[in-house]
Every structure is written in C-alpha cells, then in structure tokens.
Image (cartoon, rainbow, N blue to C red):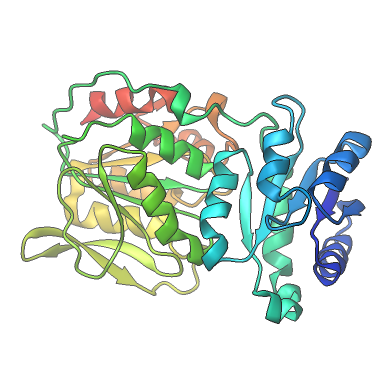
Length: 339
C-alpha cells in the first residue's frame, strides 16, 4: 500500500483528491491537512510515502513545507496546483524536491478536479517509486571547464520525465555558452508550465533557452523546449534546422513525446544525431533511441545512481541502445566526449 497525505486549504479539493485516490486498491489516504503547519505535523506523525501538496495556503505555504522537510527520509511530494499565476511557484517546488506537478483547474472550476483522476493516480504511483532524498541543488555543482567540439554531431535531442526539471537544470548549467550545436528537448510537464520552465532554464544557463515556436531556427547555443500539449519535431528550414510543431500522433501517451522528437531528428540529421535520455517513468524515448541508432547516431543515458526514477534510461540501456551512461553531474563531460 502507498500511504498518502492530502494537503490543501480547499475543503472541496481535499474531498475530491481523497475520493479519487481511495478508489485505488494500492493507495491509502492516511489523513488530510488544511495548511502547511498541519501538514508538517501530520508528516512527522504518520510518515506518509507520498504527499499531494497545494502551494498557496495560509500559515505556511507549500514552498515552506518543502523547505522544512528533512533531507533524509522525506516523503515524495506531488504538487497539485493551479497554473498561470502559480507556474513559477510550481517550478520552484520542483527545484526544492517535489517529484511532479498536477495542474489543478482554477478555484472557479474545482468540480473539474474529478477529471484529473487518472493523471493524479499515475503520478502518485510514480512518486512512490522515486527516490526519497532530492538531488543537491544545481548551485552546489559548479560546471567544470569543458572543450566542446562537434566533429560528429549536428543536433542534440534530450528527453526527460519525472525528476527531469532538476536534471535538465544541472545539465544545461554545466554546458558552456559556446556550445557548438543546437539542442531540442522534451519534458513531460503540464502544458501550462513549459513557457515558465524555459524561462527558468534560461536564467540558470549560459545558453539561450526558449520555448518552441513553429519555424523557429535551431542554432548553436540555443536550447528549444517543447511546448506543452503538442509534439516538437525537427525539420529543414530555409536557414537550416528548424522547429515543427505537430499534434500527430494524437494516440501518443505523452504530448510532447520524446519518441516523436527523437524519430524526427533521426530522419533529418541521421548519424549526426546525439540523443540523451534522462530520469523518468515509463519507456518514452525507447522507440526514438531505436530510430537514432538505425540512422547511425548515438544515445546517452543517465545512470541509475542519479535518476529520481530509473525508468526511461533503463529501457534504453536494457535494449542495448546506450552508447554511454553517467550520473547527471558527469553528463556534460560525457556529452563533450561524444560530440
């Protein structure tokens, strides 16, 4: 059984989240908390496996709860929060160790919480499988000086899911401003957060990080973040490589999909493609890794030791498709070696 504590200042939200989770045989809602102070008391008393956490609450907000949790033995946290005005708060929560985000409708549409049942259950289960201790802050990991030479590579494509915000922040912070090829990346995150996530990555990296737009050129030193809700694909434009945003395939379990990005890169840049699969639940990226290898390109994977969830990299490694593996703190050096 996965023991869950529900934290929200809205009585209706607490009721709905509790009812949604209690329908699952493997999920046990052990209690609820109405604000951050009560949450900390219940966490210390009940030792839940997972906490669903609202961010805007009286007395002590969600970020305050995350800052107060001990480094060791802390529960995994899934943020259930509204978007837009709270998007920066949600991203800060991920940097403070939250495992994932669920987008809650605005306060005027709380009845729509019932529609989030499948996503909430899936992310609570994924969180339960994640590491308890969050990785260290990227600020604690000064990037080593690296020499980047793109003799074999025209494009780097990256995929990540659970734990991805922290991993991507670390990797991009370690890459130099003169990175010689463009980077395109997919992160499984609610659509309302991708623009704010690109801004946050941009502020913490020497590279230019932007959210994808149709026809946007891909150029050295630029990182393009897939827009939420639509696939990012690679195309040939008038000035070279460019972004293409495509709703197909709509049957994909993720949109944007790592597979869609990787497959399109393999078709356009072929053997000069370098794929990177970071922490995440599931196998998105496996089919794309096959496509990159079939085209003669290479794929790197994050080592289990630093993954929040060793799912996506595991499937690639076990399929014999990983050309190199490293913990996230060493990934930039591994990228440099394979460019």
